[in-house]
Image (cartoon, rainbow, N blue to C red; front, side, top):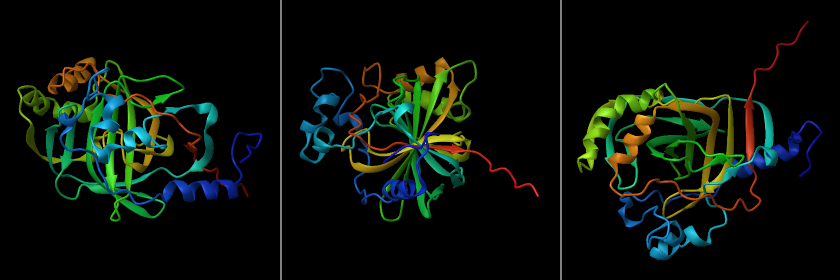
Length: 279
């Protein structure tokens, strides 16, 4: 595949690339509900280097060739200008906030809406946070990374990711959850939080990366479509600390180490309105 001088790709090449990215093999296995079965502690018997040995069904964590997270190097991406912004149709639904042992996750019980990608509808199931970020941009990691996990009717998985750096401004969605997260600090494993609107999660930037990878927790299932927003948002130091204090794993971080890219394509979508023709 050859670059043009403007660092973009020819239409036929992009068409083939989009077909590959948007129609992966069906992904049936989802994230482990109880994360106490593994940990993030370096050198631990249940640490990231050992995940593939802990259970037979987790072997992909060790042997997989499309594992996540990875470094999103701007020097090696395929640029697609004039793309459309992601179409989301989220709505309020009853939700539960859960301490999964190594992270805090919000699960929507009913229909919380969906995101449409190339004609396929992916329904929102849950979101959770990792600190520091799991993915990086040109080698740089951020203070927090949020994942919104969506599943299509035929069990394909689409994950929207967003980066956060510590700043003076709190994250609005986390601010709404702070009181509930504080209850999880006292060994409470889950808490009903009532109607919760996913639209309050800010993930609609004008530039984003997309590639095919895996879940970043066991069973490390591959074929996951990752869509990671390029915009860096802000979160307070107190919010990041609260997310880590609420879990009980005694680890300083809950981010899986970056995995080998293995020559996978990374597409960089850059939204830009087309200029109206002049007559």
